[in-house]
Image (cartoon, rainbow over all chains, first blue to last red; front, side):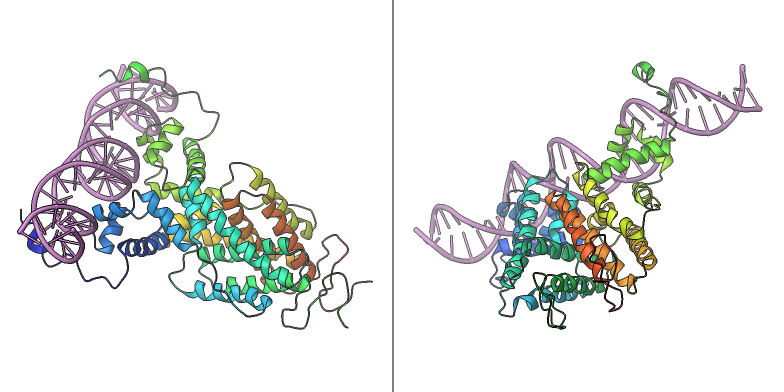
Length: 212
Length: 212
DNA sequence: GGGTAAGTAAACAGGTCTGTGTAGCTAAAA
DNA sequence: TTTTAGCTACACAGACCTGTTTACTTACCC
């Protein structure tokens, strides 16, 4: 066997920074799954891109399904905590979205995409997608509660509709202006709930008239 | 050759209603593509479900890509014309959505799903998806113009965000209430633009006060 | 009756997919 | 120095994919 001939100088490659092998695999899987689709990418492709053998990949993840689950779990991160006022935090969400849309590697919401791609039969994927969506809704609700909005729960739902709507629209249109449109709509909804969104048109929470 | 032995009684099956073969294929492809995903369904599966040979399918569609394109084109239908007042038409959109969500065979927007599944490389799919989304936006804009809304274009965009947001949310959550939430948000946006949405709280278009 | 259009079944080509098996190499621990 | 954990390369099984080919059958029109 000549198998060592060219393998010799590639073994135990550069101590690849500090990352664990699992993390290296996940990072590559994330990039490929997200940009090209989960079904479109085979495990061979991932292994080749990481620069490892397929056997090694399967030593770290028992199946492609496990890798998919780990990919989505790794995407499930909470927004960074902020000490800005709640209303600003809420509106900043849409500014962040707009920056994301402008990046050319944005390809929609990985959770929605996974559910769309893998179908309703894949319960594991659906479960994590639901958890993610709910966590975002709760994030909005907490900030609305802090603002004293009475119907915080309903308004939080409406805000996530604007977020997901702009994501879906940007996915097909590649138009970051969708984020701005969502932000303007969000401002109207917030103002209507009595939140001061910084343009002096805050409407009172409970039928009270604002001064003049 | 014994090929006729069991084929004999299946030939030229029941004159299958009146539908053309192309339509029968498309109908089946639609059901399978939409419910299970485009990549998840092979042409063999479609042919078997229609009850025809694969050769026949390929005689009607030169490739799977052509079948996918025809599937999406067939999904691209305009809303039925209505003689109801424009504001009612707009709000009825969300009622229709809610009924769709409640049906257990609802699986999101076929255009968004196709783009998510097939990736940005598939220009043909992306093109028809963009055309569809824009047609819906224009539909809203026409009705807003009829209502004399000044910023009809911007508001139409905001309304499609609510539509697509509720579709995405329902896709992952299976919750028809998302359509109601979108409707409530739409009412606020319409009222804010001076449209009377039937609860006596219409706000004038241009700073004018409505009678008491 | 002869020709044609459109269907059938079934095999095949050539590719990809997930997942496993085998054998050998290397680095580090014992 | 020996053992062991973890890697590599590579072949393979078995399934499924798109699309083509072959040979045959049926219905219908002229």
